[in-house]
Image (cartoon, rainbow, N blue to C red; front, side, top):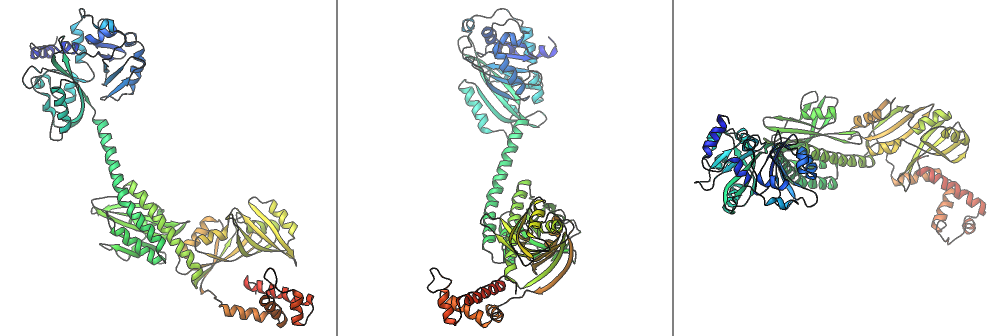
Length: 628
């Protein structure tokens, strides 16, 4: 025995030795390293009919070892786990160390009860003492017969875990590892278990000799003599700092997420209500900034829009404290400038305040940037960034809806002419394939949300159109009527240009396609981001050229002007036929009057009346659909 062992033996004094104390633990305890049993207490030797330590674990433990070996491999070093064994073999608790594991078996019968009552034979105490010293977990033994239940033995693993040497520990109560952050409930639970002479396992924060904290999983069990009296307490110590810190970090992240969700939930509801209730874009932007600035956690919010002429971001709406200047250069490192350049959220922290910017983009149309400033000493983490990004997308969607509705209401528009050659567009592809001219008439929306466009085709027969369309992929061409050297067709394809432009606040006025080139005329509200719409078209369709921009007032015809124009186009006979048919109920069903009766009222024959009526109806339709 070396000097340390000798010192430990002398300090233990008349109290039972470490190996002797473990021999008195009523549960079978074995230490295993590399598949070999290096120590077995008396209960384990009796239960598994073991001799000296050093036996192969698979041979000694039989079918149990397969489950135990797997569990040891799956147990993190420095932690413990409870393992249920198969059949009636009970369960076991594994304490895993760097070089092996200590296994304490459940006290339930294991099928070897007959051997359990036998007395141990001679054993190699030196081997058992060495096994205790080399056990992979900290082991302590205390003597409750002495004042304050002091420690009488600690092994080398305990010294490694705590930093205290043997002679600094023996003779002291184990509470010296506790400190100001040690959990009082766990301490009280251990004290109650010792008073009740029962085993206990707790997790609490302890302190090493150098003052550093570590999380300790402590298992304490009473050791009884043959009369059932407690002679010692044996303790197992596991440093579970890594696992515990991971658990606490998860708890903190969960608490932070719950805080964010609770705080942002109300904000989302407020902003959603603003988007639904605002009547125009300016009102929407003002209300959004106000709601964000008033929310807990934010100091200020503003919405800005790029001005390409000045190279700045001009602030449109703002709310909250510490206003920034009215414009920000797009070539600075401000997060708003970075967001517009990359279309991704950007965050920076200056003077303890985080500034976060989020793009306001919908259907590839840029509507500006939303920037928020947080409270002091608080940044914007990934979770909050995701939530605010979704909020920004909702705001952009609301702006898009206001801008799209403005197309129908405003007279101040910008007329844009574009030339497109992208063959993914059906009129471009068909005009090239059929060598014809196509002129856009209007779009037709079906009940299944499908949209087709009506075109007139000249310079080709109906059969030629259908044959050319058949050769094209993703182009559907159906002839509606063929007459006077032209065809009226329904044309659809994979790319619905008119619908796509409408979703972005642009109204298609004309599409003229010939020789694989289409001239497209758009009307965009003057207040909208015209540049962004045009850039979106250029990005979507290769070979797009801008022909012209022109600001103008949209022609608005009153009802009286429309009626006067139609009346000028009708002859007296045509006007009389249309008027008498309408007033006489000819368009109702069942008809209260006949064409014969109406003809007689005009003093003309029935065929003549119907000719005047059909001509008047045709002129009415042309006036309504914009052909006259």
